Length: 153
Picture 1 (tube, rainbow, N blue to C red):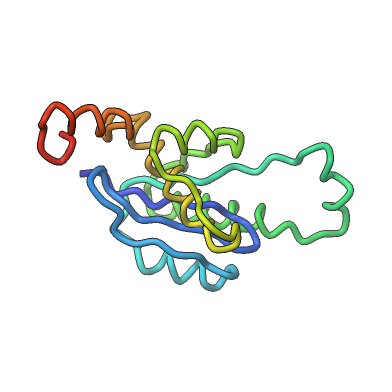
Picture 2 (picture 1 turned 180 degrees about the vertical axis):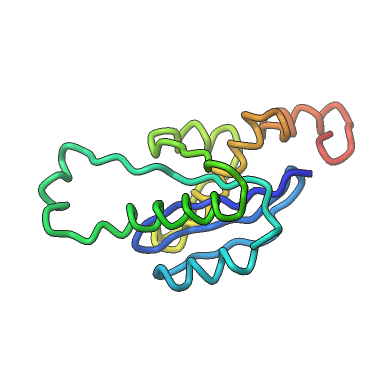
């Protein structure tokens, strides 16, 4: 069983703790202190860390001037935490993968964006498990159910 702690970093950082079979916990950290508390809670209980990467978009460059860039700060902390935990470098996924991840995981955010950062974190972690051939896609689960296989396995 692979235990993944995944993140959608930003002003509010979504997080999800999961295995191939289930979501164990999820939430949103409103600042760096809350994020540090989440990481402390799962110290020693994680096999791999997955983070949504940060890319400066051309239409947003001017808004970065003079800003504190909390997303970059969160990513730096999470990278350091992963290395400190002896988990190696975390996997980083481009935000551009979100539509593909949502299709493959079968999970899309519903409602207000500000309440759904954990869903993006889930999708990043699940996508890692799918890419590593440790978890099936939503389509594979559905097909297996139609074939009468228990729990989609």
